[in-house]
Amino acid sequence: MSDLNKNLKAPGIGKIIVYILLTIWAFIVLFPFYWMLLTSVKSYSSYNAEYFPRFFTLSPTLENYTEAFTSVPLGQYFINTIIFTVATTAIMLIVIIPAAFAFARLNFRGKNIVFTLFLALMMIPNELVVITNFTTITNLDLRNTFTGLILPSVTSVFYIYLLKENFAQIPDELYFAAKVDGTSDLKYLLRVMLPICKPTIITVTILKVIECWNSYVWPRLITDNEAYFLVSNGIQEIRENGFGRDNIPAMMAAVVVISVPLIVLFLIFSKKIMAGVARGGTKG
Image (cartoon, rainbow, N blue to C red):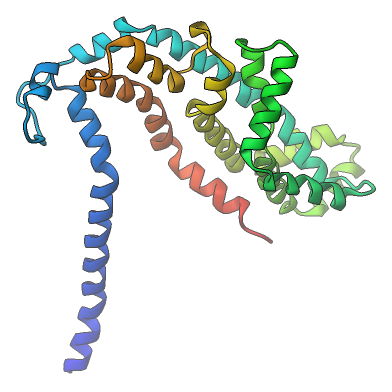
């Protein structure tokens, strides 16, 4: 009887331990966000008057957010980032979807060799790609233009691979039946494959949006005109020429404003992201 009671209690103890560990991990992950938000609502004087960090404030203020938008053209950085993100993501989908369809469904000579060489591009260090892209964009006189910002980011070997594996899971019988009915490859892609693989398409789109929104190295390298700054490299401009390096609360307010869209986007589509990644990694 005692052994039975132990067996019944063991799963409960295991769950308690798991929940405790998850709670500790959640606290570690979420604390930086809490600290960023807390600092953003502290006044400059009260923040500097703290000899020891305080984990709450009794007099929150929104003046830091006002200063974040008035000291530098943060609104213009947002508009530039939205243009860059939307254009890059849309062009990328136009490029990678047909490419993934060709590798997954069409038969042509040397397909496997071409796809293997294509995957080998993932072995090239990003630093080498940045150097090559910088030289090319500079030679084309596309620095400080949206075209120069967008062009190097309109394709992705990883996303093509993810979609190719996803498309390959669709039974061949559907394709052959569609061909018997006289359906073109493009119509089959649009009416059959894309609706079936919608979770993965949404996942790729959201991941690309996040990637574009957080892009820092390339925009910082290819633009030195404030009119083309994105929110990521605009942070450095804020720190250097905005309200200064010492005004940490105002800096945190700007970071909160920049981070909120991505956090909301992820919270809304988190289930679809997980479903799309899981589907892309499942065979059969």
